[in-house]
Length: 578
Image 1: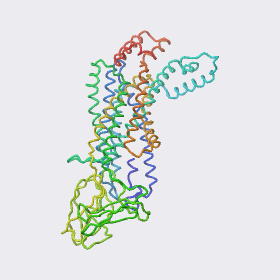
Image 2: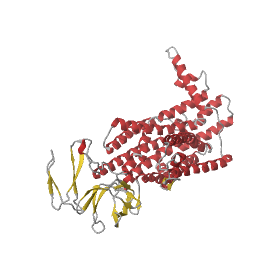
Image 3: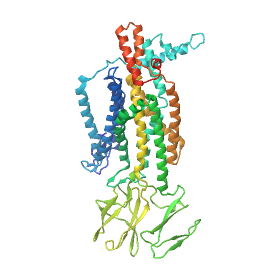
Image 4: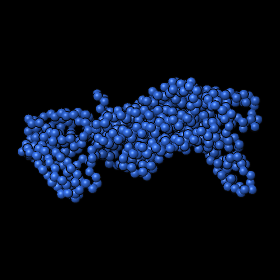
């Protein structure tokens, strides 16, 4: 990725643009593919590997590990969100100076190498479970044989079996079949979970776009829309310790049985409430947005250059008055249905990233293109420039005279400056084409707080639940299944948005919140009928039949006791039922 961002590799004419764009695209695709492969290797295995470092009687410590593990993830997320834009903002290049994307990609790559070295150095201290062959291949073969064997014996003359996987007993070990049953039982419970990620991952897309229409001025601190993403990891670093050391123990003292599945249900509900909050914020934002002409309309601006008001009548429109040109009443704007030839090249949207739209500016010197002159006024039709600052002081020069001009700019606004012929002695007038964003970005904090609370009780619990309910040889498999729900959730965003075709953003937020509430109800019903398992006990039962020693039974009792204490179930007999 870092190499693909170096334009100078193929920039033979040194104009700042790569001559062989295909090469850079191919390198980018290769980088993304390697990231996908690396993520697929790290994510499901690192959580399972961490859990394997604890003995079966250390369930409480293992639970703490998953919380600390999640803290580390979000600590890295916070650092990358802050540092990477700073690195990207640097100017670098051999032939031309541009935004330094190679540095933004290169530094994390170097740090990942350092992390790999540190990880390898500690290799001798890790507990490593011996590989047991291609477990995924064994699982697929067993499931395939069970389905095929069941189809062969579909006649009513054959006796029914307790579970459809039991049809694999003729060829596969009963232990493997029991382990697959445990995995399938949890995967079935995962079916509703992608809807949570459908909402959660929109905080990096739709919520960021929402922030572009808001005011990011926090006094001396000016936040860009994408910097609001730092709120989530900051809250994670705060809430995870609070949940583990305060909230969960307090709930336990109150006598409430806050099981993992109940925590996950609450997390889904909190995420839905976060989108309700986002919808309320969007409604307030919509009240401040300007109205732009539709596809069948044109925008016509009329400027009264005289000293008295003028009355103008256009076809199919009522007469209206244009005040004389002053700073406060400089122009009027209407929308008319017109021939495309009459349409003007005007601003049709708020500037992106909360920037200000302004005239062309090069190294603090303004160079205007004059297209219309008046005896005392030059009408400026500027080339557009986006400024990511709230106040600008720049220089205006015509070769003979040079003067400075300073002005405050509201975020998300658009301005046109009118420069008199004698601009050093006469005041410069300004027209505010689009009002600045007036609804403050701080109003997004409640929705970030709700979605983060939901993430803490849903995601951290889900990691631990996936590990605790997985057979000993399929810990990483079930972690991969948990992560697969994230990918499905991202696809659902595209599908729902495409099918719904909702123009109002607040209505789309409400739609997603409603869908998650409905899924939350379904999941709570499934969770109510779910029976917690102790995979170690089930596996030991099958090994006992094959001649397991008596000492293993004693260890089994200790594992079962610890498991029951950890989950705090009312019905202890329910814990060992499959």
